[in-house]
Image 1 (spheres, rainbow, N blue to C red):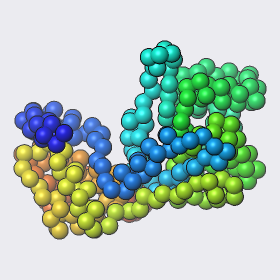
Image 2 (image 1 turned 180 degrees about the vertical axis):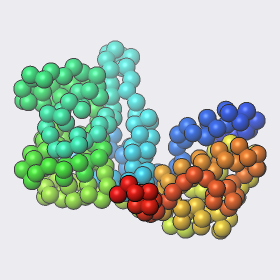
Image 3 (image 1 turned 180 degrees about the horizontal axis):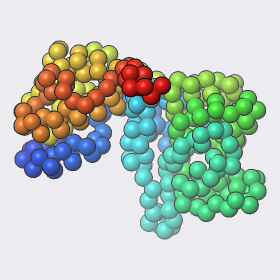
Image 4 (image 1 turned 90 degrees about the vertical axis):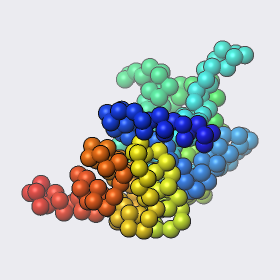
Length: 298
């Protein structure tokens, strides 16, 4: 597998500048230890025996620190397929985004839309609920993922309770594990229901620090960068600079390396250096609000 990856990089590196820039902008999954642990836990959920109290997982992390990318990676590994014996569509993992506020109707609509089922404005909520349960059973959904679960807190206390009861009821009726994901507010959202909070195992994606795992991450990124010279990103000056600029968020690290790679290609330097990092058009997360103030936006 590593040999194939090396051949692919050799092919990409020898392509035109335009093709390499386009390749740089395309999303590429970069694995790391914590992500692998969480992915393994979610895989285990897909084969968990049905019971009256199914295990659930809560994925918590700051914005742009890899939560949604990790969930989409899991979904790509468990895509829908047609059962050859029955000719029926199966969907082992279903991922939806929580509505912007806790609303039962919009929640069911999100599920129906994700499985390409029609929605009717006039349909009664209990009928919509029954249809959702029936469809998910027919599709044999084994894990339901609800991203951006912290949106629950956008509603009143009564709406929050109702919405969490809907989630709890759906899990009980289907006898399947739930994976909920969101910012640190997601933990607060789940904690508002004592029964739900006891069922969810929290898994936290913390900000990156300058340690061995961080150096491994940079080394993995460097393996897929389509530039002709070695940058040696794990070297202290470069790694410290990238960590400082990114504020320890993997999404920001990825963006920094994308912009730096494109500049390295355009300037024909073909490697990422401190000068390249200083020249890219990038504002660190911790400086963005200040930049808005300085430009009179606030």
